[in-house]
Amino acid sequence: MRHVVIFTAVAALALAGDRKPLPGQAGNDDIELVGSVIVDRAEVTQAVGADLGAGYVVVRMKVTPKTEKPLLISPDDFAIISSKDGQQSQALSPGQIAGTGALIVKAAANQPGGVGTVSNGPVWGGVGLGNSRGAGNSGGTDGGVEVKVENGEKGAKDSPLLSALKLKILPEKESLEPVEGLLYFPIDGKIKAKDLRVRYKGPAGRLIMEFANSK
Image (cartoon, rainbow, N blue to C red):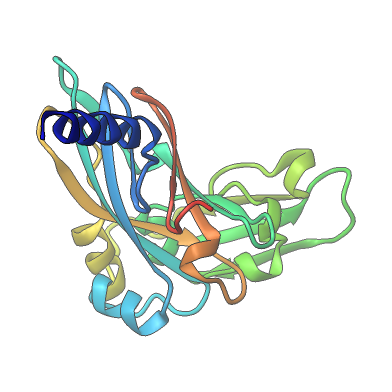
């Protein structure tokens, strides 16, 4: 009986040493991330409380700091990557999705194409999202496009969509306690949850969260 107990303990330790991160989880000594991705439009609408339209996925994220001092948490720390076709984009702010301004899209200096203006809506499917870095950032020589947001009229009332996005987004704050909220990402075309990864790059280091079991 003693030999059986010892063998069981050794086997458990060996399995623990080989244990891989579970889907929807990532962490290190300073931070723990737990998330789930929503790709179906109807489910996205239910999670947000309003219809974003086509071309978006949402990640429900819980961030738990493990540091001694408050950790700065921000949606800007997160990006999404598709292993299916190489698309990647930064998390968008509510104003970049449903603000009163307009998204200005133009070709980079070394790329063909003209200049376009699209107001209040997803434009990612038509501007080479495969290498996009998110609204408000220049695609440079990588993305071939430059995207920025022009401010609308001051004092304009928030739309129902904008209000819903602001209410549900992962808040930007310093905290020692767990923080939860939604992250909004533009994605072009049909995509499955198993094809997506979330990249965290922030004060607590760099992490990759996958949503499918590693083979």
